[in-house]
Image 1 (cartoon, one colour):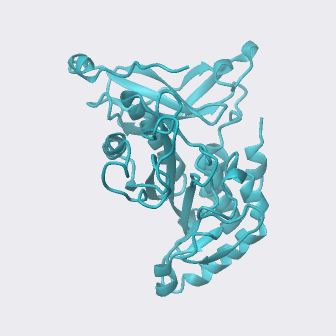
Image 2: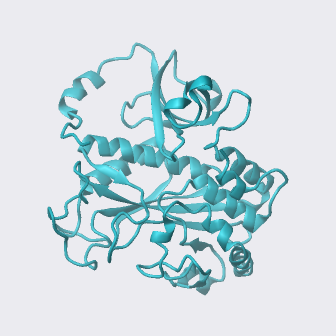
Amino acid sequence: MSSSVISNGANLAKYMDLPQNGKVIAEYIWIDGTNGIRSKGRTLPKKPTSVDDLPEWNFDGSSTDQAPGHDSDVYLRPVAMYADPFRRGDNVIVLAECWNNDGTPNKKNHRYAANKLFEAHSDAEIWFGIEQEYTLFDEFGNVYGWPKGGFPGPQGPYYCGVGTGKVYARDVVEAHYRACLYAGINTSGINAEVMPSQWEFQVGPNLGISMGDQLWVARYLLERVAEDFGVKVSFHPKPLLGDWNGAGCHTNVSTKAMRVEGGMKYIEEAIEKLSKRHKEHISVYGEDNDKRLTGRHETASIAQFSYGVANRGASVRIPRSVNKDGYGYFEDRRPASNIDPYLVTGIMVETVCGSIPGVDMVAEASRE
């Protein structure tokens, strides 16, 4: 189904300027049973100063593929709070973990296990930077801006492109960029990607669990911005078959030891560990990733681990500048655009820094 109805900003503005009489609206967001985002709003009596001021809440998990109908309540426990760029003022966006009524994490609450790993290896001070690629579609399911019933010219002029016919929906991208900065997301940049109507934003460097938190909130902001423009966002890793690039979530990683002189030794040690757990990592690096990791279109083959300096056709890339300096970070190019970042960052710290009792990120990914 599709609809031509989009937000009417002019009419909405006169209502958004109305005073709230001291009340604050908190928009609770969470990850549902299909790796999507849900949200609902709640009125608070005053502005919260920290996550501790936010009340626990609940929702109908039978409507989000997170609970059966006979036992449908799922609890929302706030874990992070951000300024709301849509309502503004003192209003906030609240990221919440999902918990079952028996005190166990809900099946899609992978944040809990990942955070245990980060807490156990806090001395490593592991940083992440994630490059989130996505594709825009119009209301009828066509790639946004592409000729009706046809295709644009071959890839080449679109990456970091400028000008009509090379770039599509820049207004959506700019609005999202500003919304992220307003909210307090550590957004480090944006660019048009190789396939027309495909874009990327980068979040990080972020420490530990905050990487997953901020990427999920940034995705939520993108979906909300897209509502206003009548545009659909796809995080599918291969949104269009044929000679077109797929969409990934390249993940840049460094520990404290990697970021100082002599760090190349620790980068190489980490890559060696990754090479021995290739299948395990692929298993949590996104659905339909086999359609993207073909060895073409700036990807490595899903069947074999590889690495190289400045090689965008490798599983793991060591940037040229890092190789020259002898310290810095590495880039894992395998994660797909639809990853759960908690799973990816969690298995990364598990592999690079070591496992801990009671936590297995591969098992975590398949938990029901």
